[in-house]
Length: 459
Image 1 (tube, helix red, strand yellow):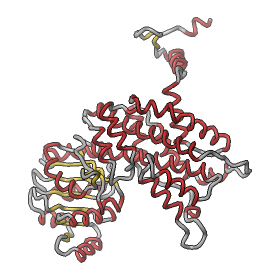
Image 2 (cartoon, one colour):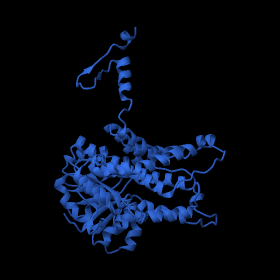
Image 3 (cartoon, rainbow, N blue to C red):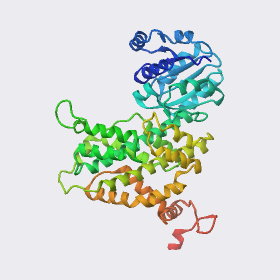
Image 4 (spheres, rainbow, N blue to C red):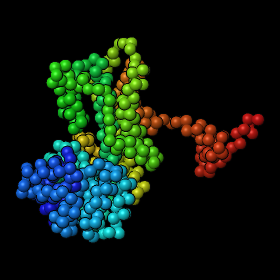
């Protein structure tokens, strides 16, 4: 395997940035894109280290064997089409890496389909956006362990680093790399929504510039994160057309590319409560119901919500802890379900730089996960819950009274209350199930399941 050469299919924004990153680290790139313009542009800019190809066959012929090919194409059919186009020109021992946001079950299917041909297939989660791809992303490769050592030097060369450690590690077999990236994005959705909810509360009696100053202050302490930092920048940005804050000129609709939806669907499939991650996706979905929102818009103006910023800060922190504990709980659950043996502490560690959810909190989480792979069961989490829950409850009470939607923060409070409640009403639900469907129930103190003739006893 020539670790100084790689094939790259797909030279869009992310692919182009990764190509430049690779070449900046002494790795020559053999590139192909369906449209010729991006290929020709890279060839002009990097004539000595970029080889331009205009067919799949030409790309494969230009690579020394065994080949290493990374493709950056949209998830779904384009990935299958790329594999089908390359396959006639590949040989046993070649390695394909899908760096897009593919669904992990699709990655596993493709691995199995290529197995008989002796071709190694990796699903490589890549986070960091265009800037991260160029300067150093966080990467989550999953696939055959026996082939990982061949791609490791290349991935480590271009990855972000934290305290001189590359933000890439072997995740596990099968589709584990793309699964970890999927849930990473689910946590990203929830973190973004939590910040938006704090913004909504503060906007009641603060200007955008004042909110930015608060976020910058928070970002100097334990709440420091990439997302909080860029939010402060956004709040300060002025409209180039002279209308004041640029943020106030942006339509109040948020889009998505599917990974947040997949995270929620997979949580339901695993029967694991990742409710705050699902709440964040649904909040984006509601933002797109523009006709309904217009019909239901409240026009009367009441007194604005006024909360101490530090109360909001504490509520935001606890919400974040629930977000990450649920996200890493999904990892833990999937690791057992699919026999992946995920190193949760190691995953938290590579998230500390290069990716969108990079934050100071991950230092703490990485250490806590070494002691217990269920963050909700750590003394640290229980202490945070006891300390910060009153602030979160105060914020949610205020938001309800003033009609400020806070689905993620409210979801975090509900989940914490569910964990702490001695009775959830599930006993009544199980009795109802037994009444109409003879689904049985357990008596307190017994492991036996029994059915009761409820209608007979009423008669």
